[in-house]
Length: 268
Picture 1 (cartoon, rainbow, N blue to C red):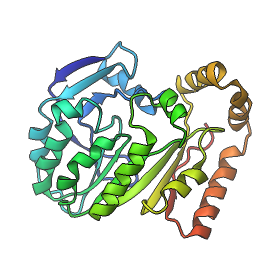
Picture 2 (cartoon, rainbow, N blue to C red):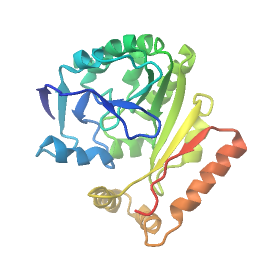
Picture 3 (cartoon, rainbow, N blue to C red):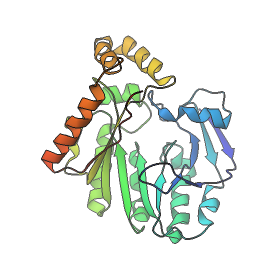
Picture 4 (cartoon, rainbow, N blue to C red):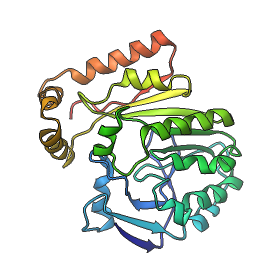
């Protein structure tokens, strides 16, 4: 892992996400090693030659930048969109914690999403925001698959335990089920394992643009060849796989009284 200290030009940036006004990315790059990561496109802007997942830029002035600016009362800030705010390096640098501390006087509502149980370290700060939604990503309940697809993220059991701690602290929780990988992600089973801990769910399907599709097919061919045909059917020209799944998710959530929010990419 190549780790560099850098000086950022900005840290609280306007968001294109549907549920956030601003986003904060404490780090550049990511060390979780997720084979399906969409954020690898960031290399185009950062100038890194290293493979995505093998470098992290530590934005050493992030807290100073987060403290500056007008009030954010009534605005929603999301951490993070193209990195995980609780990478292993966060234990050493505590950038996310320092950013949260700096943002607190500015008064935003907060959304935090991660694949790391380290998020529970900051419950003492997160509960002080006007509102906070703490989200844990779960793509599969099979930790052997997790080790292959998200090798350096927290084990699934630790993520569920983190949800339990947030629920006990009275902080709003959600589960991000995504990306949904055909023949891998059992979204019903994930709901079944977490329904008592999640106030709502996000659902997103796997986007195979760029090099992601090639990497996923290579992984399936090498490790799970029996699942490759189902994967290919989902992405075959004219396939209605994702349309049907979206309908299934919406119907399931409506019948079960679950707040399910679907953000699927169709047609590509």
